[in-house]
Image (tube, rainbow, N blue to C red; front, side, top):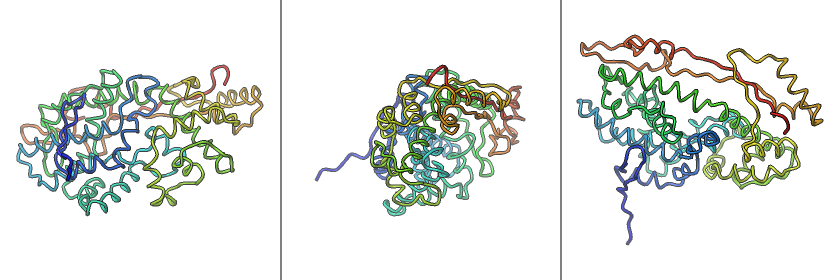
Length: 409
């Protein structure tokens, strides 16, 4: 009888070799729910700005698990007791933390799956897997939900210095070529410790934390909130919304079976059931791109133009400013579009809209990053640091944008 070698090694461009520690984690990686992440890009439409940003959620999940393996090893070396069951649960929780992401990351959450976050879908997938794997994910789910009594374990999964952020900043920096995000994650992990059941960073790591927070701020402005990525994501959200609107009116649209399920039904928090979850598991980036390649030739003025813009990277103009957008400015662009194409105001608002983005690298009141001094004193990074910018980084900065057509659609 042929059996698989379950102690696999992945060659990762960031960390080198990543080992799969046991057969349970191997089977989770092999599962179709997790394999779907190979077809979900980590950074949505950012490749329209940074051509190298084609890495996937699959890459990121394995990288985060690798960092968790290192974190557990370092904490044990420092005398922190972590049982084998807890270690396994930590690895599973971080491996599956993004399993609920839909196509192009957040576009689904704001368009055809209303009011259901990717975190909630991740939890539903984990619960489904738990029943398939004889309740072996129960502890991982408890840690993922932040309900486990050992608080530092929950912080390693979801905190301001968690393994998720430690991987995506370094990974996204590598694939975009934006060197500002290239943090020293290995040094950060070496400085981790636990005091009173909370995660802390030893005094020697204070400059690594400063670099981490500064990198996060710069990556948000330069990459995640880049104006071209921003307008492209908004166009995709609007294209999916328009397709959903047309489908609910009885319009026939091209698309995969999984995509048409979400277009032909109003899927909300209350109606997201087992069938929705199984259908969602068959949905990935390729469904959306394939559909939009068809939709660009649809008779509907709005849908065809939105899709053409994304497919051909001929996007709307976007202006970002520090003050709120004046209503008159918005109305003028809407009126111009109505006059030019003889379309309704509702249709024009698909192409002319405003919004806002906020960047806050560090949240002072949310799971602080604490520094452990040699004296035993524990202090928040902002108070501990002599870096003048850290207090500034803890304040949210909001910018406002307006999008409208350049010359013609």
